[in-house]
Length: 109
Image 1 (tube, rainbow, N blue to C red):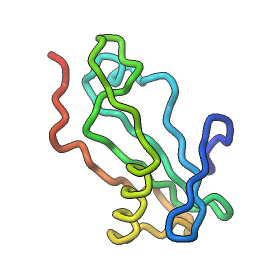
Image 2 (image 1 turned 90 degrees about the vertical axis):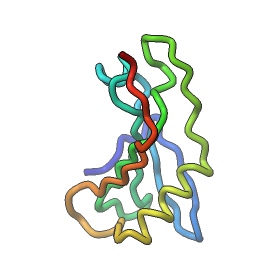
Image 3 (image 1 turned 60 degrees about the horizontal axis):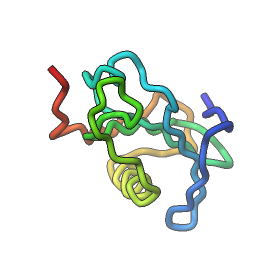
Image 4 (image 1 turned 180 degrees about the horizontal axis):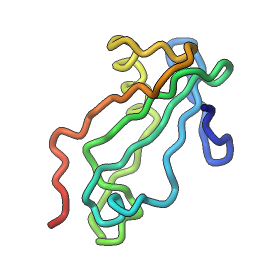
C-alpha cells in the first residue's frame, strides 16, 4: 500500500529515491508517551513493501510535554541503509518490513 503523498518527503539514498512520512498527529499511545515515534518509508517510483521504523524517542507532539527530537533526513537515510542490509526489498510487494530501533525508549509512567 502506497504512502499518502501529502506530508511526505523525498530522500535519495545511494542513488535511489524514497518517500518517507511521519504521522503529524500522534497515536493515542504516542500522545501519552507509552509508545515511541514511528515513521514509514517506501520506494518513490515503484512502491512495494513499506518500511516501518520504530525510533527510541517520543513523538514531538505528545500531550505530556516530554521533549522529543525531530527525525532528520540523516536518521531516515541510516534507517534505509540498515533495513536494506537486513533484507528489505522495497520494490517487492509484501507485508511491512519492521525496523525496531526502540531500545532505550522510556515510556511515561
